[in-house]
Length: 219
Image (tube, rainbow, N blue to C red; front, side, top):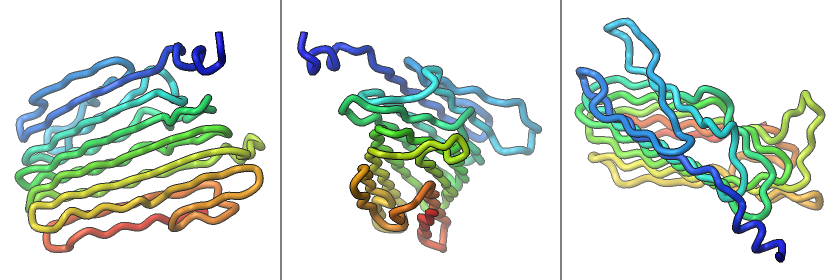
């Protein structure tokens, strides 16, 4: 059996979760594959909280996760249980797609723990947001390239980050805060990444009357 044929037959991680919140609580909840959601207990007047879990423990080439969260007239804080680890790929990209929808003055805070990309990782990550005129968003996604404290170095890596935000009162706004191709010979990077960068964080805020603000620092 040739190597390409063997690669195609490897089992891949697939996961998708959908969660819809209203003012009175959860409206719909669906989980498939490795994507799970847990809801911590909270005081009555506190925002709804969702903890997203990848039971596979990490992703590699050909794996995919899709998170879909809807908030209608309520406050929602969503995060992940642990840092998402992206391991060496045999050629294909790992994919993470997050869809957030805010309606009727909802407030969404998307605050996942960092993604850790190991040597040889390939990740394509997309954040899609739909907000009505009164809904607000605060989102922060952090990415770490290798674990410096463990003495890890990156020789080969590919990372493409993409955001798209639609607001009822504004035009659609989109950006690619990171498009990084890193090899042992050179590194080319999108906005905000330096040749010796070990991490980057992508931040976006969308609020009624304030438009959309975004930043993508790195170090």
